[in-house]
Image (cartoon, rainbow, N blue to C red; front, side, top):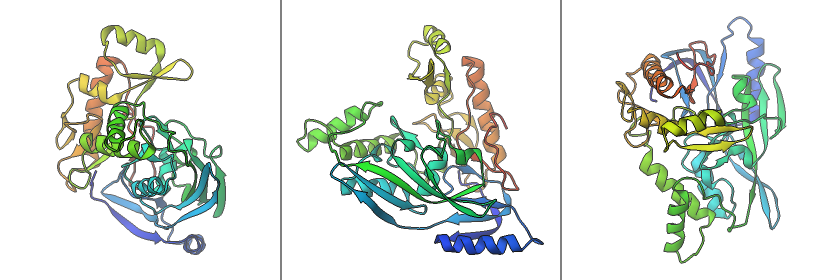
Length: 346
């Protein structure tokens, strides 16, 4: 969101040994302890004007093939690799599975924290392992996907902020070019068009990736030109009975069936139907092309309080109209580096 922030100090980590050395010195320096705050690419956080903490930034780079068969390939990716560049690289190599997550901003090390997802896929669908450092005990851990306790836009890492620093992520990708996920939203139509342009009757994973890039570029603002942190509100999950009742009043409401008689509702549809597309409280307003995105029209001048005011206004309006509570997706960081994930209204 391009909110100005000044931290006490920043430590750039380029390898795992460097982190071991830093943490040893940190543990011995009992007189000047400052809180530790782990920050990856910063694309999904809301920072305070002053951050009284030592910021740890994992910037390790590298992509390594661990195992390979005719059907699949296992790779290990260091935390500092750009996520979108990784998606493009794997698809170009003929390693498939990440294509639906194209053009999501950020670094690879942050992807498991949020269990990033888009267009019918979540990171957990192809994640194999995570290597992470447990800050309180100063120990390394090799974690499986089950250990990560993934949920919708959630994980064990997110529920234990500033406890873990992820250094590398393992993925199992497949090599079957006929296996695609293209049934979500406009993806199927655009991917089919890409396939037809290249003389194919059915889309490939590469077609799906290009389709998603095109769709996202049309709908989402480039944070380099209009500051934002992507989808600001999570798609709320409500009981199926409540969704059915809302359908009788709003026949076009967009929802997707979920387990346990629940339905995931499109938050962007709710915001648009409430007349808030392009609305909010200046300088923080929703994007004209995608109501789910809050944009900052006063970069480095607007504050978290401005974001909080716009969030509250939008969330209150949606609750009054639909009796649905919206939850914020970006991470709210307090002055001491602590995290306020659970706040609905700030």
